[in-house]
Structure formats: C-alpha cells, structure tokens
Amino acid sequence: MKIFLFVLMLLITTGGWASSPGFIDSIKAEIERHDIDDRVKTHNLLQLCYYVVDNPVEGLKYGQQALLLAQKTGYKIHEAYAYGYIGMQETRLGNNLRATEAYINAANIFRELGEVHQEGYALASIGSAFQRQGDNSNALKYLKQGLQLFQAYGDTQQVANCYLNIGESFRKVNKPDSAIIYFNEGISVLSSYKTGNTYQSELTLHTLIGNIGIVHVEMGEYVSAQKELHTAIHFFDSVNDPYRKSVYNAELGKLHISMGNSILGEKKIEESYLIAEAAALKEQIRDFSLDLSKIFESQQKYAFALKYFKQYKMYDDSIKNVETVRQMEQQQSRFELSKKEEQISILNKINKLQRNLAFVLLLAIVIFVVMVSVLFKAYRNIKASHLIISQQKQLVEQREVEKALLLKELNHRVKNNLQMVSSLLNLHARQLKDHPAAEALMAGRYRVEALTLIHQKLYRDDVDTKIDIQNYIEDLSKNLVLNFGPEFTLDLKLEPLILKIDKAIPLGLVMNELITNSLKYGGNDNPAPELKIRIDNEKEEEVLITVADNGKGLPPDFDLMQSKSFGLKLVNSLVKQLSGEISYRAENGTCWTLKLFINKLK
Image (cartoon, rainbow, N blue to C red; front, side):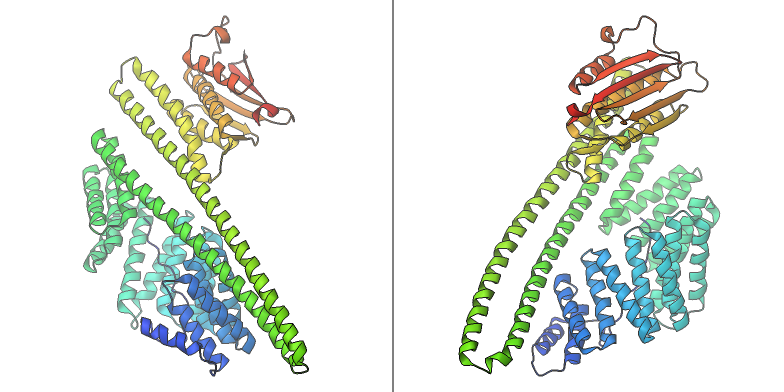
C-alpha cells in the first residue's frame, strides 16, 4: 500500500500524446508503400511502436523493425529512440531484464549525441526497471544519474519526480533519514515551480507530503505524521483520488492505534476499507481486511475477525489468480513473438539469397530455373520443418505451464485448508482456555502448522516436490520458540538437506514433537534455557539431526519404546516410516539424535 510514482517513459520526437485507430491505420498504410525513404519509414515504425499500447507484442515487432532500419541507414537518433521504445514494450510484457538492456543502449547513444534530456529519461527508466525488480541499489544509482541530467536541462517536474523515487528507495531499505531529505528536496523544488503541468506538480507535491507522513509514522514522530497525512488526505479527497486517499487514511488509522487511540484508529481503517470498496480497489480491500481482522482479533471479537479474514483470503486468492492469468498471457505473448522473430529471420535469409542470385540469373535462364526450383523446394522444407517444430514446442510449453499451474494451485489449496484447520483448533483452544482438552487442541494445532509450513514453501518457492529442510527447520523452530518459549536461546547449525515431500512431511512432524518437548520441559526452573538443533551430513551415507536442551533431562527410568506419550508414540511411528533410528541421552539436559540413511531417503 505504499505510494510510488514511476518516472515517465521516453517521449516521442513528433506527434501528440493521443492517437486514434484511424491515425494508426494511416501510418500502417504508409509503411507499406515501396516508394518512401528509409528514414521516413523508420520514423513511422517508431510512431507505431510508441502508440500501439494494447498489443505490446505487435508494438515490439515495429520497434525491432525500426531498429534494423535505423542501423542500416546509420541515423543514430532513430536508433536511440528505437531502443527506448523497445524497452517500453518489454516493460509492458514484464521482461525487465530485456527492458533494462534496451534502455542502457538508448542512454549510451543519447549521451553520444549530446541529447541530455532524453538521456535523463533513459537513465531514469533504467532506475525504474531495477526498482521493479527489487534492486534498490542499482535503482538509486541510475535515478541519481537521471536526476543530475534533469537538473542540468532544467526540467523541474522530472527533478521532483526523481527526488520522490529516490526517497522511496531509501525508505524501502530502512533509511528514513535519507528518505526524508530527498522528499523535502522534492517539495522545495516544486515550491518554486511556476510553469508547466500544475495538476501534475500538485499530485507529486502531496504524494511527497504523504510519504513523509508514512516515514514519520515509522520513526514514531506522530505529531508531524498526523499533520502531513491530513494534508495529503485533504488534497486527494478534493481531486477525487480514492486510491491515495484510502492509503493515507489507513496510515493515519495505524498512527492513532500506535498512539493508544484504538477506537479512532479502527474507525479510520474502516473508512479506508469503505473507500476502497466503493472504488473497487482489490489490493487495498485485501490489505485493509487483514488490518481489521488483526484489530478485532486483538479485541477478542472473533466473529468479526473471522469475517474480515475470510474477506482477506477471498481477495488475496482473486489477486493471485489474476496474476497467474497475467503471467500465462505474458508467456503466450513471448511465445508468439518468438515465432514471428523466427519467421522474419527465415524471410530475411531467403531475401538475401535471392539478391545474391539476381546476378547469376542474368547469365543463364537454365541456371535461373534450376536455382529457383531448388530454393523453392528448400523453402517449403524449411517452412514445413519449422511448422512441425513450432507446433511441438507449443504443445510442450503448454503442458509444462499447465503442470506447473496445477501443482502450484494444489499446494496453495492444501496450505489454505491446513491454515483453516489450524485457525479452528486455535479458536476452540481459546474457548476451552482452562479445560484439559485445550492443551491437546493446541498440540494438534502446531502439528497442523508444521504441515502447513511445508505446503507454504512448495507454493512460494515454486518447486515441484522438494523441500529445503535447512530452511524449513529454521522457520519451524523460530515459530515454536516464539509460541512456547521466547525465553529460550536458539542455537542453529544446519547443513543443507533437500528431501522430497513424502519424506519431508514425517520428518517435519518428528522435529515438531522433539522441539515442542524441549521447549515445554527444558525451561522448567531453568534461568537460562537453551535449545540447540544440528544437521550434520558430512558422512556420505547418513544424516544426523540432533535436538538438545539444557533442562533437567528425562527421568532415569524413562523408556522411549514403553512411553505412553502420544507425541513420542507418533515420533516412533514416523521414524519407522523414514527407515531411520532415534536415540536419546540425558547429559546436561536431554539430547535426541535422529539418524537417517541417504539411500533410504531417495
């Protein structure tokens, strides 16, 4: 829910901002003429690349054609613009790496030609591409370079936009002081901005003020934050901008909650929720629903908490499904583009051969007929071969996409169902707070959460059937320490271990039981409780996993095989599934050792 303004894309050399279907059709008709100059044709192709926004694949095709013609004619300014517009279309396709490469080529040529203003746009666009990839270090580098050029050129509006973007990058890397400095610089620039787009400057100005308010909330400077957020909210309400108004209003609600006024804070977040709902802002409805769910849960209003949590899950699933469809469309677009590039490459090769043969055709009719026949036959064979390869490639890619999507959706649904079971167990346990069954319900909840964590990693990491046990045990142990024994000192030394899901699930349940036992009993009358977990895979044929605490240890007469504890019975059963061995020793506490054999884990 953070406000961020991306730098404008490169501007076209001629023409206006608006375009109509008739305008685009007239340019398409123009480039089909055979009597137009290559430079004029390049210019028209650049316009098509810029104005065709509904179909980035088609726009990218025109940009690549313009680039080839510009390189052929040696007209560098056209080549620079072609790279810039190719970067713009690659951005729309989600190809940030290709977009960055294109922008860099554009910036180099603009620098060579002394086009300071356009070089500034190219550098700022590179910074925006890195920021979309989460690379704030490179984003800052190129945004600052673009800022210097805009300052030299005197483009005050773009200077302010760069300050806003740079400040936001610093805020994202948790450097609030630097963020405040750049936000204030942007405000200072706009305060002296007398000409240009007044609405754009006001929009940037109040976004800067609102973002300063967000930083002040994060720094605990509530009085300043309250004033700045009110100023931003008032402006965006006056220009009927529900997105920014709802975001800043929700930040104001969180500020009131931090100041101890939970009633007013809750009211503000509810107002933001209603604004987002009226404007159909899905992401904001999702985020505000989660905020309200947490607020009502803290107030023990579980019915309302569950209502808003279900709302959050519904919108979260909807947004993720939309994103999945978008990614599939991008994959399809890239595949279609690949086919067209392949066809263009074949036609270019054939045209080159035909030009070379033109001289030979003048010498003899017989050679002409023979060569044409050979080339035509070769062309048909090549075309037929490429058609078969293209169809097979499309079928394979379609099946791979479907497989990946189904696996990811399956893990997602399993994770959601397990989370729902965990939530129900948690609610029942709270209702039976002093009842003996509450402890059993909570134990069941943590076993379900251990399974949820596995499916969550499968869903987030986008893998097929394998789990990084090193990362899994780290997350599991930290969650259990937070719930059972925050006073424990956690000592982890985990070597890499990758297992398939059918082995990871029983191992995860075993680790859940052993860690839980250590946290429950190892801290009794222990002023400095410790929990040590190790994974040792130095031996080629076996893996040793140890869980140790420094508590009082097990009773002298303890027998693992005769234990009536459900948890330890479960451990014995699961270790058998893993074809492993488990042992324990009472030595300055309790130490469990699980031995797994590599050949039986495959």
